[in-house]
Length: 310
Image (cartoon, rainbow, N blue to C red; front, side):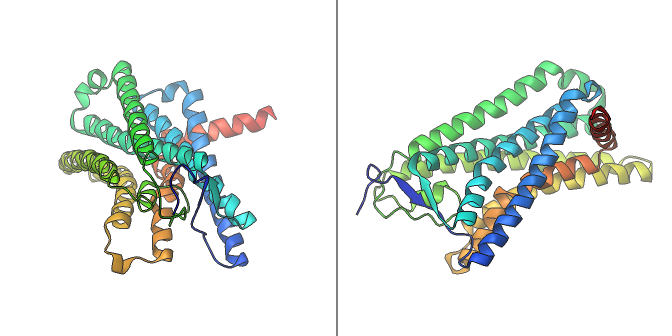
């Protein structure tokens, strides 16, 4: 029997059993992380350098790209290291830091997606009030509230989780440090306090989901009233991919935590965790840039300008 004071490291779930599959997973994670770094890095650089892109939509997109970069850099490098060197260790402090930054970035991303949904609702349903409702000061306050709320959420969960006595070993059934896996190692009823915090967080997430659904119902009603078929098609083709991002994030995460034990298996759990912790960060730049001609032109100008300088 061990407790949290004697645990100096945790054992993460191996991505594969054979050396060939470990190297394959390393290459897949490398490809996904490079795509996420390139896509989000281009968005950040383009929006920061393009003064004509200093609008609420692109301001929130820049913040979303920052949260994506933070999330991908929190979980993937350690998983790649473990796959390449055939190890599964992570230090106690490293696990706490990984848990904090993952919760911080994931929570900030979800809040930012909710704010971006509000931005689209105002732009489509209340276009005449867009400039007053989403002024520069209001946008800065909303972004600051999202980051500050995410920071406090991550701080509370991390401090509470790692204050629990752990006496069921140090093996985590996940390729990165995650709250439910650490709670499984607890031997005290104090974990009920963390479950209470998780319930509050889930309620907040559900509240954001209700807001997103309500906003999109209003958006689609407004789009259907557009007389031009081309205008309706353009609006739907822009909104539907944006709706896919929080849908993937929530559906996979919810199923991973609420599925019955009979459906649980290491391969399924691993696939689901990759879908909600890695894939959205790589898909976001693709979804939010491919449907935006203004952003594509700005990215192209930035890239060609850099090549000309060299």
